[in-house]
Length: 245
Image 1 (cartoon, rainbow, N blue to C red):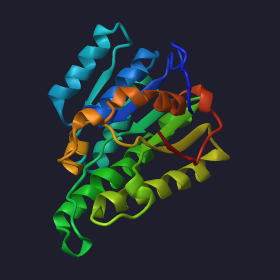
Image 2: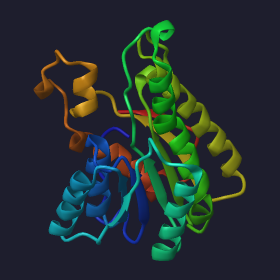
Image 3: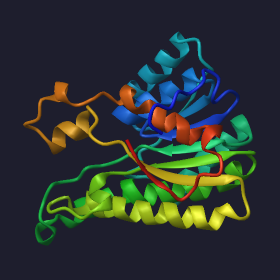
């Protein structure tokens, strides 16, 4: 994807759900998708920040997004079904999902990891991505070219001390992505891939590396070409792959 240049109308008429839409990567991706023609459904539990993303998209003259307030930490399977039903009623289909929601947890040795915190991280990072994808599969099947993109991390691709539930949940995300890709490839127009964005300026990065100069870390806007490639038609037929920025 090096030097990839997305055309301005790359995502014209597409409907894309972005989880974690109030976060650094989720908000940047939502705005980039909208700027390239997509109608974006914003999902997060941070209402004020989500509304700022909504306002920025409207101010840019892009398609009007939808807002889906949902606290992934507390959501039950029925909540994901209700989101899918809302998207069905509003749009009738989905052309893509970006799973950008995530919870860091604590950087703690595994034998000292708090079990309640473990459950929260696993639920937000892994279970929520599974349940949302599962609930939306029928909507994705109605698309001629649907893409599921799972946000990943280098700590999920190689185990690293103290990354605990965060690293393990993303290792499972990688495997789940590959299983979805393998199961869907032969019988649908749905592809699934993961992307490790690398260091990105934002709250999670600051929590992970508190001594780091944030100005030395790129903003999420700088890496959006890779997300546009995976969400758009130029990556049609590419599935089951692990990408990195």
